[in-house]
Image (cartoon, rainbow over all chains, first blue to last red; front, top):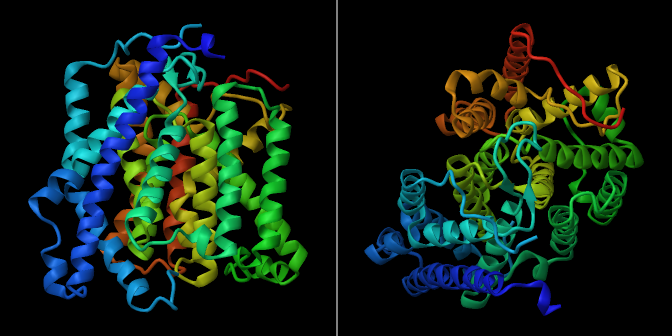
Length: 87
Length: 374
């Protein structure tokens, strides 16, 4: 089985796994941080407005920040009233 | 066969830089990470299409776009589920479990085809999709719409078995239509990005967020490099996801049937016209030909622009922009709500545009060539 894969192929696979894990982990960690701040601030409009920091813009970009804020705002519904799940 | 291919020759520094800049400006570091993943996957020798196998591409390309989207989607949903209180839908309800199982099976069918072309005969793949979606619609009857707005069809939809059968034919047909349209750069990913943007604005759940991010970033990579296609996994997966979202949106009243028809006008129209054209000429509906509108536009543009990737990408962006892009523009302008039946006017406009473009291109002397299945 291992003879079918050359060393360069294995290195490439390793790079693919690293690219996926490192960059996505950075993004998910940032989204999680934003989510925790929103949760601690009880999703008030002031907290939601200040959710995106410079770190968020570097990690997620403007589009990613907008998407994350929307996901967190929709998620609030589930957190506060768990008996009413996502649609 | 080597495990790696040559570094793509057409990947110039300017194009590569432009692509990375777009990804970074939109999605920051995670956009760059996904670009790196797609670039690495495009280097694999497995899953490659020979030049012109789509009747439109002139360079070797990778079919692992769907695999890249699938990897990122699974890692993202898994990560969000681990690091936040979010519980993925398939763990919360049986309906979501059945839905995502059906999508997963369609993706696996496509992935097998991407790794080993023609390993599964076309009829077996078609039969598998009918069985998977037949079971899904039986287990989740809430996905079957009762009202479409068309008087004759609505009468038929009152009969459970006919409603199930018509919805099944629609779902499988739609998935095949998406697969058939996956040729020009940015065509299917462009349509999918517009559709997912509207779906994300409507629902805003993590799954739609992940799909919107992956489709948009893939669109940039696909359009700029011209070396990375969705492949069967991508077109089957996105086709099944969009078909199910569309059905669910119509059933719950968030979207009207004419809105969904306008949004997905190009793949559906081109699929129906292509099947009709093949049958009229005595060919099998499974035959391959280069008579699709995107083939004709590309063949018309290519000698005028003298650059294959520009002609290919411009074809895809023109079609996705004038179909799903037009719908997105009207939607964002707030002209009509997506639940309005007035979207039938936009759909009628898209049909007229399709017919006019076909007639004009045929008159310019472009002939259709059939390659198999006579």
